[in-house]
Image (cartoon, rainbow, N blue to C red; front, side):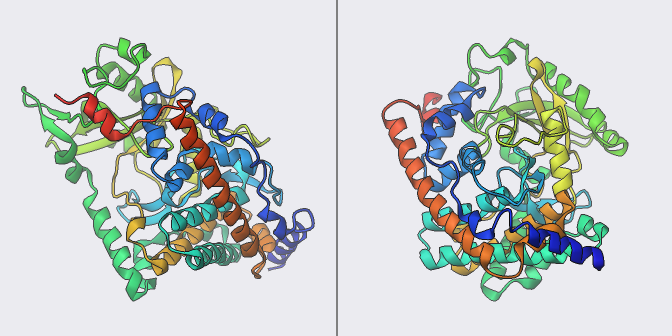
Length: 468
């Protein structure tokens, strides 16, 4: 216990360098957002950048989700206590949710690691708190709900970090948040949301997905069905790749898949390689995902076993983290796909059975995981104020566990946090300020689209282009 007290004391001492009230600072927010938005689109597929902007135009919250680089730039000018450890890097409330462990248990945690990178833990917490304020404001829940969700999130993070500080290293490593835990702790009003999430996750299997996105071709082979702009084959007339894209020089999808598999197999454990060998690839297509990832390369491969039971693997491009240009500490991984995988394994208590990484044609980096396997996200539109507050608490708990596991310094962080409302006061103030900043940035973005500085198109626009 002496060591715990020493670490708590050291964390408390860190307040001298960075008083908790300074965490309200907005950082480098006095800038034009448009150049940063353009910078975040470099290297993406040009036609799909227009779709990305179309999705970001839907609301201030969609805009907030769509550009993590903007807030990374701003956070670089904020004070922190000086502890650098692997963090999510894009920690908004829609990057949390349910997923299946290899043992088929349903857990809740952070579930998106595209931007994972060493950085100050405060950056994740600030992005998460601000996302709740932006979302509740977007859905018009009122200022009292906005304040409640922000304060309860920080309170849950604070309490959970103290619990982790008092645990053994092994307990912190393995402990997780299960949906059974959430169901047991839910109130009558929030139990329905938890139960619906569980039922939805149970339906989101590969077998259930197969008839939704696949069909038989004239030869009776299983293929993925085109559904523009969400899903398209690379070498068909429906492709949305640029005409000069290097992938179009490939004969079809097979050379691409074979290149992916060559390195990917070696990143799996031996038993998982053996399991993968029992499946044969049937087809592969491009799949557009999310808001922030639109325009990066993401493919889904349909594999089947001897009885035609399916396995869907997702090959998602891993680019340089948005944090990389704003922190001095570099990632140890030289491969961006390995950076994502290492970060995910470190921050989650259990990860995807087929999680791995690979290099594609032209040297692009990718990470690999199962598509959709029991993955489920919050349905924010169905939340009342109480459900939002409950969701904020569980996200706060999950983030604290992820940070405790990845840093190994729960006691140090907990000592800094303390037990008072000091950090909650500061971060609620930060969230209010950044919510207003996000609205100003969104207006600048809308103007840039109207004036033709940026080109945005909706899903309907893309679909109309390819009507028969």
